Length: 142
Image 1: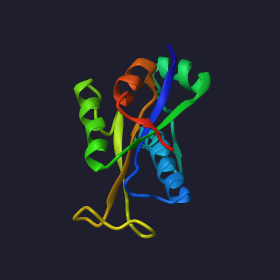
Image 2: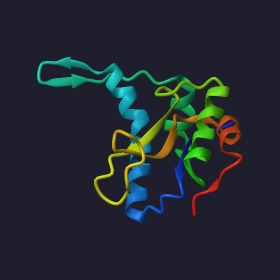
Image 3: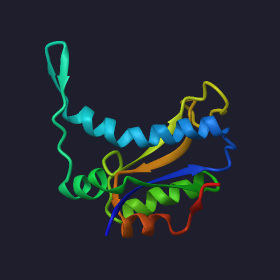
Image 4: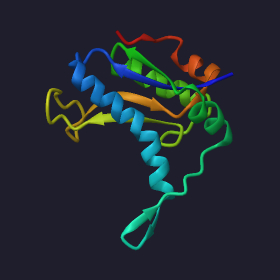
């Protein structure tokens, strides 16, 4: 069994290729920056980042094939079904997965009261079967 990263992005927002790439980039960085940020220790003018990564993720993802899957959600409600499925599987928000919101400074219009728009969801490296269980109702982004 391998590991893979899963990202699900909203198709109804009709993001340009550049905007979509930026949002997927936010998804890809979110897990690692959260992990690093929670473990960083200030050392004078620098930070030490002794990151603890689970053995299976290190061996099967970092030292493995770095597989990433980008699926599309038809709309916000379908995207939030992936969040609910992840929670049903025992995954924890902001640890195992997280939602990405755009600040709407360029091409998207705000949908949330705080002036943001939900664009996607990221998942930490997951065992293939878990990633498939979440993504099976979504098609690859095209």
